[in-house]
Image (cartoon, rainbow, N blue to C red; front, side):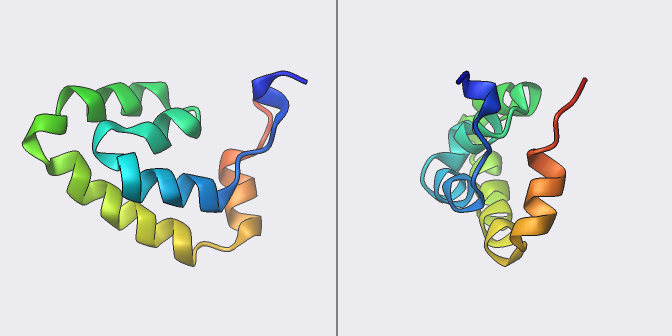
Length: 76
């Protein structure tokens, strides 16, 4: 089973957002490479850290069905 076949988990994304969100770890985990690179380039401004805290809260209150629909859909 390849890494792309494994479903993403909401709690893992939330944990990465709060712990390593300033460098975009949660964006890379969710397959949003360009956003992850943008976070990485601007991590020194602390803006990505503040945004990742908001995303952490968003992930906590998002239900699993919505998370799956957004991040676990196969793209052709």
